[in-house]
Length: 376
Figure 1 (cartoon, helix red, strand yellow):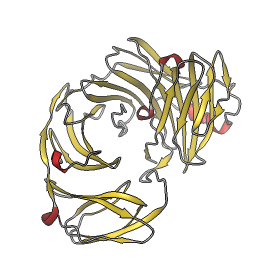
Figure 2 (cartoon, rainbow, N blue to C red):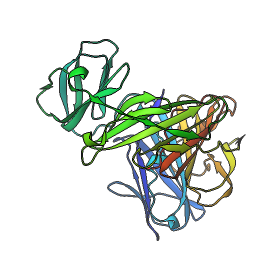
Figure 3 (tube, rainbow, N blue to C red):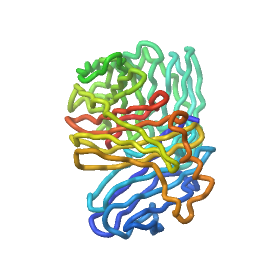
């Protein structure tokens, strides 16, 4: 089962209290604990998550189990690091493919579209490969922008502002790209650091009312809305990805700040396995580093480990869990018995530099998962 991302935020305060807020749906979080001062402790529950009351380095472990997916997460950090927001660094398997994170009551919006393409209303969307089609879409109640992106030759898009979804169904006038489409502005991207055989794909994203909508795909040139079409709180991002099937890199940036990317070279990583888990060993230069992640997946369970080092040098990220964690269910332990040559093992580096967010991944035994470069 393919997983989508769930948001996890951590804020570390100087002193003896670190608050961890976990954005999983109700009932999904099955277990949480942390290791500090040589022992395992139960974190204090708060209205938004948990609080660690010990200073220094810690290992926070939580388990999410929902919709047949077991997701075990580990975070290695230190309370002396100060305020942190690692929501973009954490990937989670708590949501099934295609299920948006929903908050609030739902309503309905319907209408017709002249051209083939994708229609988005907030976190919800639908599409058609055929022209002259109708839609009847469930969406969160509130004020949204309705965005239509055509299937072929997307040089124009339709953006309808401030459309209300309420208790009563909202029937929209027909969408016709020819009549109300806005021309996109081409943005050429200068790309450095490509490895041999890598292919480049780019796309642009409009974020309006805090709701992201993908606009158009391209290669080294991608289209964005003209600045005069943006609302006061709107912004746009350009994503660029490169892959050769073994390692891949991606980046995102605001076209208002830069229009060039220099990919991070894939690190040299060694993977080792033991009776208790799988570990990654690597060296890095800490220019703009945000975090590192090691992921092990067999299709039914996934384990993620996250570390936020601030110094260059050699590091080890070990996904092993101590056998003495009180409350850690025996049913979760087989997730650690992965065969290194049978499971998909991926190592990810995330960095923020020169107005762009970067990620690079090295995958053992299988293609790299589709994770974005996430810096916050």
